[in-house]
Image (tube, rainbow, N blue to C red):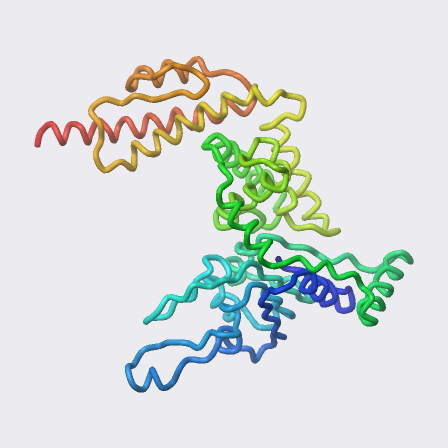
Amino acid sequence: MFLVGPTGQGKSTFITLLSELFDGAAIFRPQLSAFTIPDHLIGPPIPSVYRREGKQLYYIDGGICDAQLALLEEWPDAGVALARALNTILLERRFVTKDAVYDVRLHSAFMTGNHAPQGAQWEAVQARQLFFFQAPKLRSIMGRFSAMETADLRKSGKYPHAGIPWSDVEALAHEVEGVRISPGIMLVLAWCLNRFEERCSAKALPGHLMNTRSQNNLLPVLRAIALIKDSREVHYEHLRSLVHVLPAGDSTDFADARRIWEEVVEVAVPSKKHLQEFQRYDQLGALMDQIHRLRLSPHTPREIIFEVPYTAMKLFGEAGFHDWIANCKGLTTLSDLVDEVRRAGIDTFKEWRRNTHAEAEL
């Protein structure tokens, strides 16, 4: 998460209060500057090992790789080179050198800055920031009062301490991994992202809001949303909650992006429709999943049989697939998804015929 705003808006206070929510968490909190280098965050290389064996190994204890929460203040001041050097750590939770791969136990990273960095070089970094929040300016009496009182309570040690055991956070993270996302959910999410990107491009909104890199991080978010709502499976209405992944704040561009997402999801998942009407999505998603697996299969079967959820029906081969697709009707979004599944099926069948022909000749 990247929290941006002018000096004096309480960004440091926020991450301080955040760090005090948890008991037992390993927290790494450096103050970044133009002179910060990767070794300051990761840890120093071990010179004795390099001299003796020529291996590039690092002492990572106490650094960002060893932390569970990273609170990085003045993130833009460190420069784009350092930010890009941390991309693998922040996204994949790995630190890779020429001689070793270190597993990173980092759960979350929170960054602050006085401004949002601009430029093509920063795009890869921005794409890895799942949450972006623009701190509101203190323009009202209530806002100023709340900020002063919070700062005073924290300074005097009277601010309530939640005391959440970090072990509970880790247990919840493991539970999230077990939440199921159906192929139908992924198919509808892909449609929503396509439409969202098209409409954002038409309004010249920032391109990093939900691109290919950030969309891959939406699946864990959907799983977490489902678990918070006491479900072990992601449902279509949970797609609405992804609006919170979009940048928050008073910016007109960000407000437009949130409105566009809500409108796009409303088309795909109408609030007035009963969830049983979305069974077609599940069926199309299941077909797309089977087509995808068929394309990736190293041993192409001689006979193709597709299974359709919620029915005892089986589709035999290309003819059965096309017959079912031709009769698939329902929600507005279905026409686009039907066309996409049909195109994927046609391409896969062409490849399948080439492979079976080649095997027959052998």
